[in-house]
Length: 394
Image (tube, rainbow, N blue to C red; front, side, top):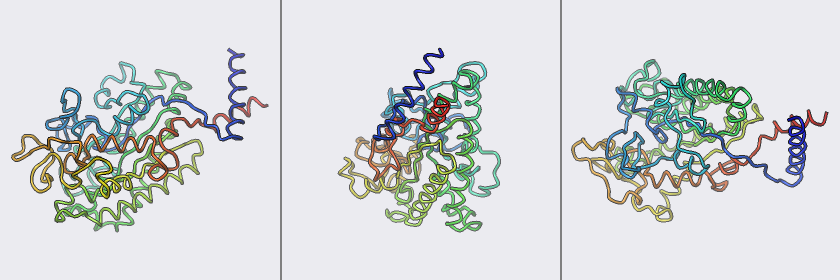
């Protein structure tokens, strides 16, 4: 064992010197995918919130999913997290809520877990604007969703189970090679601009987006303290152009929401730069979803889309009066989902999610900074290797 360790350290240090002198990328694969966020990537966690309206476990959702199963994904098929898992060679991350009751009795799924919850936000209570429109920051019983703070608490349970299952060193190694996907913020912005909300009376838009970013920071640091090293962070998209917003604005985009989405994304990018300076052992890939989505809206035919305003599934103007509810009077769904950007009044189609995941995985610096996920997966934690080499050299 000692000989093997000596040989590994010698080879590692040699590779480190080579990489620094010739820009060679040291490779390792992703061990797991841990998912945090909202309905854009919720696999079915909200199925367990029986009092919530933010659920999708009914048709026509899932019409293009295997066996036409309406799992609880807010899509006609797979979501972006599913596609990303496939890109990095991992199985789809199972919903935490389906595992939570058995975590003390069985082994946790080592390849990853999804904590994402439809309607959730950075702030506790954001999801409740779907169920009730007042007291968003004062609600303590999140019947509408599992907010990000709760999702991170759930991850701490999974972390402890991994330590029990793999040992401290094994869990640390596994998590350092895993991806931590974060997709959050849209619902917080929707809540601020909701006409029945009183949040705008408490904060200016700039104060609010800054507060969003600053509130996200301790949650990411907590994840880091629990082993997370590789983050995949997706910015807020052009949410003012979703069918729900267009329907309220004579088919035009809500420019206010779009403007402050950009401002939040700027604050989020600054936060990531700040975190990197404070926590030198983390690496991240930031996806400019706003820019990628806007490119589709401006050049739909380039991506194979024909309809970028109306939802495929729904009712009323632009199919945006309600979500995709088969039992709601007047609900219809389009026959060719592949040429629609939006599935329902706010969520993308499976085709759009696949395009976004593809850009996120291997896109250029135009949309992914400072590196894409493919490069992130390949990147080795050089600081850890440096410490090992320091010991070896001594």
